[in-house]
Image 1 (tube, helix red, strand yellow):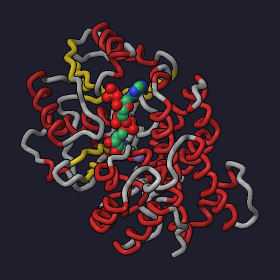
Image 2 (tube, rainbow, N blue to C red; image 1 turned 45 degrees about the vertical axis):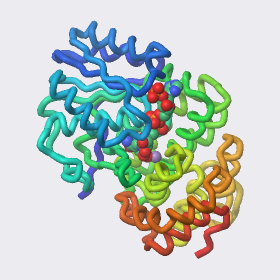
Image 3 (cartoon, rainbow, N blue to C red; image 1 turned 180 degrees about the horizontal axis):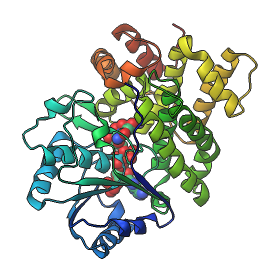
Length: 389
Ligand code: NZQ
Ligand code: MN
């Protein structure tokens, strides 16, 4: 099936939260967020005020943790069943947005279990009770426009990317004032997450004429603005916020690849943030995939003005530029350099490789992969050796 789905409305720019005053005909809004960052900066209160001024009763649900758990999702769904909102508004990073999306499913379908919706594109029809509004505070996951919700099962330390266009939000609000409060490391990690989304989407098997231009524009804007954004340039922060969303529009429809399969399976085990995992994995994954899609990577390299006259040279330049970018962003080159011990790595590498092959993102990777090769790619990301097989 060929389908391309995005939220119906996207409000963007400085102060875009105010546009929620346009939400008409709703009575009750549940406003969900993470820890304290949105409250400290005043964005939570501002959103609450705008929703109230649009005539809604507002209930807060705070404290959604980074890399949200299945338990948090069920707690939130229960709170929603109690309050009966007709609008769900999530403000924060990928974690609160993702958790709120999954809560939405179990709010509308209390009889469903996590297992019932774990397989991609098996969700029931939503919007029977509420619509969904997402306000991102990081510039990375683009959960505000994607069909994904990544929930962690801490009993197995596995991250499950729930996937269905049913959970693509109705409204995304890209208020460019919000990411200004991100600390540097968060800016670096989430920015590299966005770059990984765009590059994986550009070569993914489900890519299309609709996703390609979004992915390419995102890549070129991220190359232009991520370093300046990292160093606190206000305009570059704003540009990154939009660029990560373009990347999200691309990957929500083109899907991703094995950098994400491995990031989903290493994140919880190694206790490394999602974007940082992607940043470390991306060079090795490009090397592995380039056996089958060298030309696509070369197109990217050419578009951003990297040196090389043959496709091979251009792909090497792309890999080198990502390693250099990581360095400038204070990101380690390998898992080992990031502090993962040989003991921890060896104890988990087999299981991670096995689980990564089963991750839904593996299906759209341009080059097929078995457990043995997955293990080899992961090992290269651990040691820093080039992938040559
Ligand atoms: O919890 P609070 O206090 O808000 O603090 C958060 C959290 O500690 C803080 N933060 C967020 N925005 C801030 C801020 N601090 C200061 N200023 C701001 N403007 O950052 C910390 C991390 O937040 P989190 O939401 O976990 O980060 P991120 O946005 O990187 O989201 C990561 C999650 O998204 C999933 C990841 O797997 C991970 O669980 N992903 C979701 C995707 C999707 N839905 O499509 C795709 C991605 O590939 C990714 O897998
Ligand atoms: Mn990601």
